[in-house]
Image (cartoon, rainbow, N blue to C red; front, top):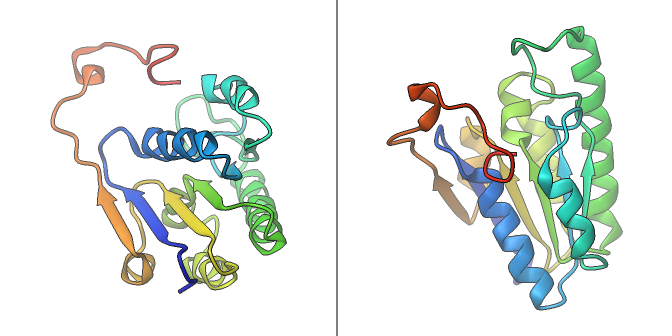
Length: 177
């Protein structure tokens, strides 16, 4: 593992994985650390963090590069479109990591991309191995692969106890997206 850098995994079925990573980005920007977040799945929707990321520039940048959530009600894209987008996100991630320009790289929903077989766990392990010394790599998304969990330094599993969606309350702007 890279000296001083960590591999951090936020996983599990509960809400808060991306939010935890964004909290870390906010904290790091306050210390003038350079952070890049690449979103693997969320690219086709508009999220509040896309706008707020610009407010933290030049310390925080976000790249939404997915095609939206795969296989949900409003997903009309062919699976091949999602695979291509995930492969492009993987390439962007590798280039960002090896550039050494960032202290922290967050790969949002990458665990879910593996679970959906858009990319492989071996791809994620190669990204981990490509980290320059001192870089922290944060991997979010449900269903973290056991091989990734094994090599990580910190793994936090979010567990749903209660969720308003189960009472028919829809996602709220500024809270959920």
